[in-house]
Amino acid sequence: MRSVRGISLFSGIAGLDLGLKRAIPDLRVVAYVEQDADCQRVLRARIADGLLDDAPIFDDVRTFEWGAGADLVFGGFPCQDVSNAGKRAGIDGERSGLWSEFARIVGMVR
Image 1 (tube, rainbow, N blue to C red):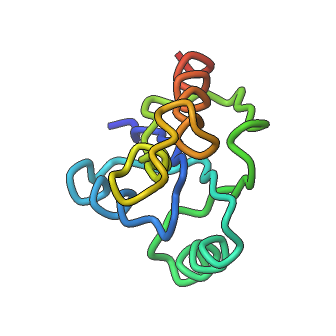
Image 2 (cartoon, rainbow, N blue to C red):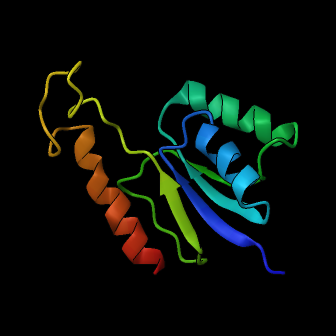
């Protein structure tokens, strides 16, 4: 059986990735996109110890391009701008507005 190739957006420390791997054992992450340097260090450490798939880590979802194909794009875009605890800038706020990059990438790998 061919593996399911996934792109992890807004990867954080890969909590969603690990959960999806349990639900989809054949999932193979082919790219991580995460801007936070501390989270990138965690990703690199988990890749090194074999917990996560060995794949490149990109640091800016706005410039991310992928031509190698994928079957699944997953992630949770930043919600600070739509959160009741935040400044309520709305879906077009600086952080939450990145949802449009998620949509762009889905369209790119379709």
